Image 1: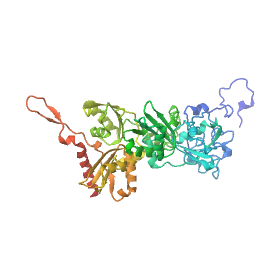
Image 2: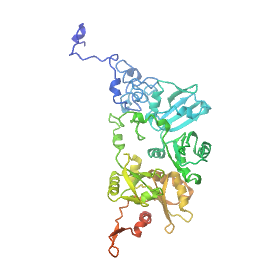
Image 3: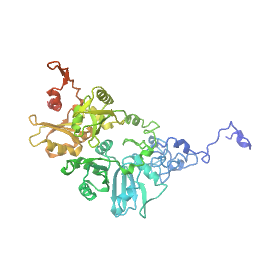
Image 4: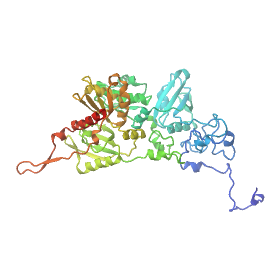
Length: 526
């Protein structure tokens, strides 16, 4: 029914008349640009393609056959690209008949980009140096089909890369690379936990000597997997080695320190050069949140995935340890920490600093207060203690910790063939080992990792080794969770003042702690 004002030609503006909807006069760029994102739903189109592309709903519908529209005016913000419009995926169940390529997308966001027209003689570095949107999981070339597959750690990074090259061509040399979407794939659980602990495809090498050249480094590290680039900084005696996959870098990190030729050198993860622009757009920090779009909320603003907001909440649980003695080790740091279980300890001897993350924030506060009142001393030097950056615990780690997981692994039923060196070598494949204790009279041993994530991987993987197939392997007790030792005061002879002195029990705190672990392990066996 027409309104009365419609039939009259008016030369003045009618303030009582609501403006009609018109795609020609209404622009939703400003509305959605303020959020920097649209929610990413795997199946986002509640209408058939014909309805979605109509005049009234053209701004909200699923993109057409190309499936990667940029109709909201912000190419960096992952608007209506791979994951469609602004409707929950559950609405799509009865939409428009059978699913087709134009009206249904994969339920799982894709992390993989298809690269076409990639010749076999093309250097992967020439392609990867054009990537700046986020950490790379792997780059896999298929020479027989003249293509390659680029897999990111986060779906948001893949979407950002795709949107970037919708407006410009990806040209390597004189060849134009075709861009498309690969099939969605699931990251292995072990790899996901490694990434949450800081794993990247870049390996940092420190304390290099004049004999370490780019050729020698490539020869030593190429056994772990294909290498994209080696950057050697001779003036600082350091190098950065970018592998083509995180899996290869992880294998290098866990295996190389056990090599006698590399024991005196620093081996750690570095920053992926492909993520140099991701920080500028506030990319999601933790893997696993498909709603953490660039510049977005970090969780689904429509509430369907609000649980991520609580899951990824960060609290202050990390302490900074500075002014550490040059001869101190990670074991020395763990010997002075008490009050609660550790999530991870990262020690940098060349910088004489360490970062210790606890499983709960209360323990971190207790240790901080203890350092402020009593203080920590390692090898005669007082350690400075401050706060590190807030971080979150991966949900898999939190669940495992509630079920008894720690960074300490108990091995029962061993014989004389299991020495400290053998245990350290075998378990170093799963991560950095802090301390190994062997009790031959009890036929058991304890392997302490620097991270609870590495201990979880070791518990799952060590049984695959023939030497450990028939042994009892379980979690032990983290000695850092023991209560604080009370210093005993003794009155000396003469007029000397009261002195605080450690007893033999305090000096051998590791053995005392391991006895506690041993009693717990024997109780489990009974």
